[in-house]
Image 1 (spheres, rainbow, N blue to C red):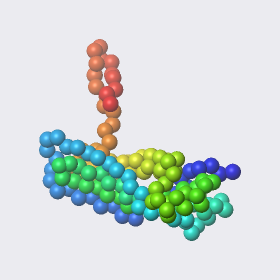
Image 2: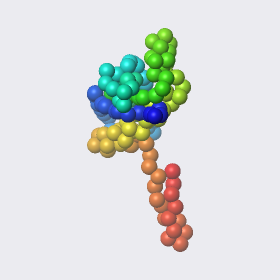
Image 3: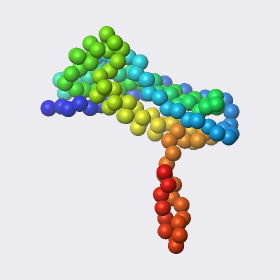
Image 4: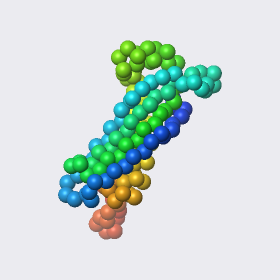
Length: 143
């Protein structure tokens, strides 16, 4: 028996635009947004997954840069028909599916954004912990 899970991920478009070199205080905000939900035309273990199209945007403020990723994820679960019905009526996903998909998008898209930001001379959209020296040459983690 298949549980609920994301079984596919694809990117259709990536755009990255840097208007200026970063200086001073920079606010970095990343936001996933669900654009559409449809039944996939493909089968996954005799089930039709949801095809969830998304836009993931990372903005560097004040108007320094923006990274946008458009793509889709395939989601399988037992309540696909009801999820499609709710999407068509209200343009929302059930809380459970929404949380799982958005957490997945944060992991995947911020990883992509890390590489893009480095190549564009921007601060990373997600800060890594840093190792700094402490008393007596011990190391400690910050972050």
